[in-house]
Length: 157
Image (cartoon, rainbow, N blue to C red; front, side, top):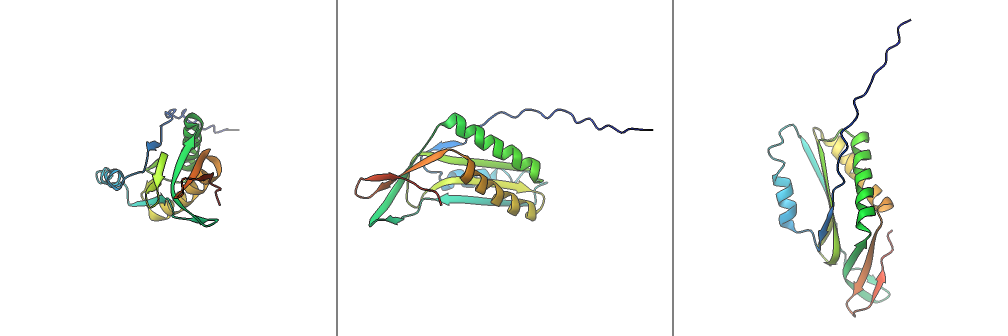
């Protein structure tokens, strides 16, 4: 009887990256990230999620900004785990995740997720998956700062 045994090579352990950007994620930062991928000619599709701070009105008060706080070491580990699990689940070429820390004003970008693959279906599915996992798993806390200088902790929906 012949038994076939496939031995996987141990995967290279990837370093945990710091995904945090102080303040808002600028349009220039996003454009530069996109531009760097023009030389990667095996990529056929990209998908991008941009989370923007809304001017919500809560109990008659208008949000002016959100102050994002986290225990960065723990949050970066969660981002890393989500990223690696997404690569295991989807056939992606690359993925970049950036999240703001500190104060981000209404209209500014606080979350930038950028996924790439050879084909469009993978990027659509992977992007939806990764954004939902971030919202559920990553310990980031937003303090909504109101125009009247009061604040409250944000409740994610």
